[in-house]
Image 1 (cartoon, rainbow, N blue to C red):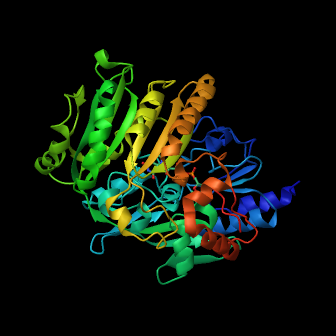
Image 2 (image 1 turned 180 degrees about the horizontal axis):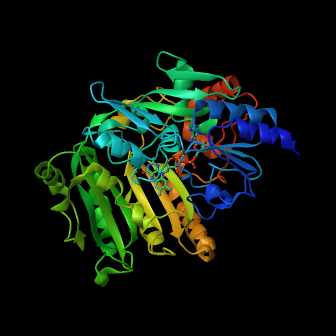
Length: 459
Ligand SMILES: Cc1cc2nc3c(=O)[nH]c(=O)nc-3n(C[C@H](O)[C@H](O)[C@H](O)COP(=O)(O)OP(=O)(O)OC[C@H]3O[C@@H](n4cnc5c(N)ncnc54)[C@H](O)[C@@H]3O)c2cc1C
């Protein structure tokens, strides 16, 4: 039992909000993006600044509390929270300062991707990150970060220049190629294992208006589309980010009613450049394919693309995830995908193949903690439904789908697409030869495993 006076002292020391179960804001504060996860922390420290983070880490450690670190709260298995412990919630630590001359941005750890895109777009610049604007930049970055710009500019970690970190002993350090380079190496892919990152310094890239959007076909054409897409990708210009999805057209606006509830094969593209060049880059693929149901590609600001899916995936739905790294997509693997995709248990459930080739491959396997530099795609299968009673069916479908295609894939997966029931073997397969070094650095920076509510690397 925690001494009430200690709690009161900690509360008084914070510049940010302190929330306990009896507080009216507790339910809202503990809610995570994934409605399937229902954790009741003992307390939530909404940190206003680095001093609050130092105080919270020290308080948690000195009182033997389980600690969870929360950025955007988007993590699949809800690793931004913990039952009965202390949540260090960084969401108030927003703020993005763009230096247009150096083309860098200093980003607070509480920012969402949308916050970053908004601030950098004013300068015609962007950080390569994911595809939903409400995702926290912190959790996404620390496990890698991939999206439309990855083929040209690499993973989010490949644009990380520096990070400020509060370590398990409460000390504050900066990690970069020059300062604490071993920690900087580990932060680039090793997740929340090494400390609480309070801000990131990113290299920005020229991205402003993009030619982008979805093209959807009847899923009966999916075999042909997957084969041609597989063969087209290696030769496609890196300015073209293009992922493939097997999913369902939702029975709601803005989709035309004639397609509601029908299974589709999707190509979702973003060409970072003019419409003319974008069309030319896609022509070899599209000219070989049957006529689509819908082609909604057009020229738009990059942040508009980044928030295009936000409304379809609001906070609070049931999500169960499984991922894999995929090197080649054989015809047999395509058949396995098609068999499973035909059994989706809900309209929102999906399989996506995100390309991680091009610039991602130009970094060596041991240059950052993110080892899987030779995969072609990061695959995700996500069972999703708004109804909590569908939690069982969407989970079962995801697991069955994964079991069917996993034999065609590599052993590991993007840690941000893993649940918390996959075990050490999966994590070891993910980090490959880098795992040993990560474990040694965990021992150096967090020997007591204070930060263990994550895809945990044991010291
Ligand atoms: C709808 C949706 C779409 C997505 N699309 C993509 C995508 O396109 N590309 C992609 O790469 N990923 C994508 N993701 C996965 C996403 O990257 C992860 O869910 C990620 O964990 C979210 O980060 P967060 O800060 O919101 O998470 P949180 O739940 O807040 O935190 C998750 C974990 O990150 C760590 N962490 C968070 N903040 C810090 C910090 N400041 N210091 C140290 N550790 C910290 C902790 O270990 C924590 O347990 C998507 C997720 C969702 C739900």
